[in-house]
Structure formats: structure tokens, C-alpha cells
Length: 420
Length: 164
Image (cartoon, rainbow over all chains, first blue to last red; front, side, top):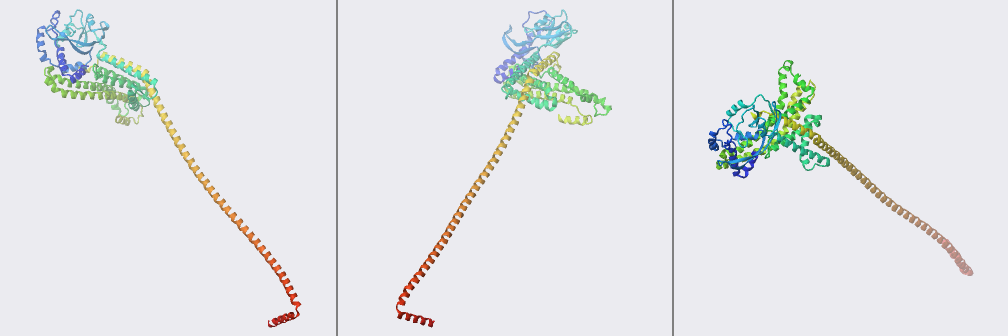
């Protein structure tokens, strides 16, 4: 993750900061080095190119929200940084991105499953724009791209192009391994490595845990004794493996999300939605008879309400529990990243993208102090959110599995509220 | 808005990878780890229980020992005391016996002395009586050889008798 790079660089070297800021502004400029491809002149804006080039440093100095969204959202490239690679004809520095190009995998109602690199998509008549894939109509013209394959269009231009050339009748389901799903693979590999090696160490060593095992054993025991057992009772051992996987998956994700070069995945709503859906399935698959009776015929309410208002409330309640889980994790983790990125951005805004070293110096104490504060807070949030998600999953599953007498059902429901 | 809309592909991969990790870890990591931890906890619990039992046993043995020691000491005291008593008694008996014997011996001696003395006395008396008779005979013979003096003596005797 580049914001971590920024953090490290800004801590030690002001000049690196300035260089970074310059390159960031450069990145968003239209490149003007491709006069040779004149086939799509109407899509290019060559008459403005010089102006924009000249004005770019003043106008598009630094767009914090753009940078932040770029970092937080998923991407089909694993972009690490750009390095200066030389000068173009106008004497501007050109940059070569250091990035991992991840493959496109999608289902298209036109071609079935497509597995392809970004470049090969052109031959199959697909277009990648702003990290989305579009199916082009047969014989459609492609918009002009720069040396790195980036397309620069104004919003209206894109809308016009889309209406004319994109085949809206083709359904596309994007299953690509993106930056975030690649990160999940890394976390999966890390978890398998860590816990399988721990499991091996337990086979050899029956005494006190050693090494990695001694680091994780208290946490494993905590999940078993403080999360699974109190809420799942005698069924605890059945759910402990799932709760452990869930806890460590979220915690590892959050921790890796705080380290350089890694992407933050729990701040992505697709991931939290998938985890919440699994919780939803577990709750409802394990729901006892009482659980369903409570939803569809709550015995503690008069019949008139039971089959009207309460039914709606209870059915909505079934969905709000996992929905809250999804939103809570996503919001907590992404909020932390927004904070860190915003605080780092103060440097660039007050430093005017490297032109005002005084501004950057002035902003540095505040920016760095707050960034460090939030950053370390995020380490705490990382484990707290993993704990809360796992705990609430155990609580919800435990509540759904509970069976109780109908006479006491109503009081019980109240007591439960206090309990959990 | 893009931030808040789940993407199908990512959703799909998350579910797939997460479930795969879960299934692998459940079978090959969590099961052995949880079992090992459980077993160790059992072992620790048992060891603690055993240690407690051993400690109780030790305490019991120690208290037994103490009782035995105390009893032994009491017995030793008693034996000593008995011995002392017996010694005193023997000494006393010996003394009594000795003094009795001495007394008897003395008595015997006294009685013997008395008997000897009496015998001696009677012997002396007898010999004295004989001597007196012999002396008297001799005197009488001498006296009767002289008529004149006999008559004088008879006169003196009669005088004495008459005076009396």
C-alpha cells in the first residue's frame, strides 16, 4: 500500500515526499506523447493538451479524495509505485509503474468464460475502463490509450463513447482475481502456513507450547473459552473451528492491511458481505424450532400483532443481524484507512504538491503525530473488530440454537437482551 | 458509491477461499491443536490433582510420624520413670533388708551376750559360793582349832544376836 510508503518516507526524508507528490500529479495528466495514433482523434483532446500540461501543476496539484479512493477500492492491478524512467520529448519525466498485472476472469454472455490479460482483451473486443470491463460492439472503435494503456476521457466523453460503442446487451460477471482477492489468497496461504505448522508442532510436543504455538495458543484458548463456550454451551466444540478461522482471518487481514505493500481487505464491503452471509447461513441452518416459532409466531405477543407487525419486525431482524456485522467491520476498517490517508494528505495539501516545502514542514508535526496515533489505534481496532465479528457470530448462533419453554419465552427474551 | 456496493467476483472468491481455508484448517489444524490443548489441560488438571493428593498423603504421613514420635517419647518417659521407680524401690528394699538384718544380728548378739553374761554371772556366783564355802570351811576349821576364840565368837554372836 502506497500510503504506508508515504508514511515511511515522510518520516525520514522530506525530499522523497516532494518527489512522490510530483509524480502523483504527473500520473493524472493526459500524456501527450502519442501523436502517431491519430485514428481516434475525436476522443483525444490534442488542442487542450498543451494547456493542461502547462496548467496541470497548478490545477490538479493534489486530489486527496481521488488518491484515497484509489487506495481503498479494489483494483485489477497490484500497483506498488512508479519509478522515473527517463524524459519524454517535452522534457517531462516519464514513469514506469511497478505493478502486478492481475488476470481478467469473467463470464460473458457473448463468449462464455474469458480468462485473459488486460492486453489480450483488446483482441476479444472488450474494453477496460476505470478498472471495469465492457463488451464492445462489433466494429467499435477503441478510445485512444497512452503508453501505459491508460485512457483519459472526460466524464461526458466517456458517456457518449459508451452509448455508441458498448454492447449493453452482453451480461458480464467479473470473477477476476483482483488486488483484494489476491490479498485474500495471501492471507489464506499465511493462515495455512501458520496453523498447519503449529498443528505439526503439537504432534511432536505434548508439553508446554513453544515458538509460534505459544504465541497463538492463548488466542486460540481465548476464542474457545471466551467466545465459543459462554454462548454456544455444549455445542461449542462444533463451532470453535469456524470461529477460530473467522477470527484469525479478520485479524490477519486487518494486520496485513496495516503493513506496507498489502491491501486492506476488511475495508472492502464485498469481503465483509461474504463473511456476514456465511454467518447468516450458519445462524439459520442451526436455528432451533423455538427460533423459527419466535420469528413466525412469537408467543409473547397478542395474535393480532403476532402475524402482522411482529412478523415483519422479526423477519427484518433475521437480516439486520448479519447486515450489521457486514457494515460494522467494513466501516471500522475503512474509516481507519480514510483517517490515515487523510492525515497524510495534509502534507501534500499544505505542501502544495512539493512546491511549498515550508507548508509541508509546517504540516509535518501535526500530520505525522496524528497519523502515528491513528495508525497505532488501528492495530487495536484490528483485533477488536475481529473479536466483535466472531463474538457476535457466536452470540447469534447461540441465540438461534437456544430452546426454552414457551411460558417463560417472553421474560427470557428480555433477559437475553441484558445478557448479551 | 462504488465503495458500498459488493462486487460479485470478490464476493465469490472471498467465500470460496474462506471456506477452503476453513475446511483445511478444521481438518488439519484446529482438530489436532484443540485436541492437543484439551489433552494437555486434562493432563495438567490430573497432575495438579495428583500433586494435591501426594501433598495430602505427605501431610498425613507427617502427622502420623508426629503421633508416633509423641507416643514413643511418652513411652520412653514412662520406661525411664518406671526404671527410676524400680531402682528406688530396690535401693529402698535393700536398705530395709540390710537394716533388718543388722537389727536382727544385733539382737542376736545382744541375746547371746546377755546369755553369756548370765552364764558367766551364774558361774561366777557358783564359784564365788564354793570359794566362800571353802573359805568358810577353812576359817571355821581354824576357828574350831582354838576353843577359846570359838567360845569368844559364840559369845560375840550371841551378843550381836541379843543386840539385834
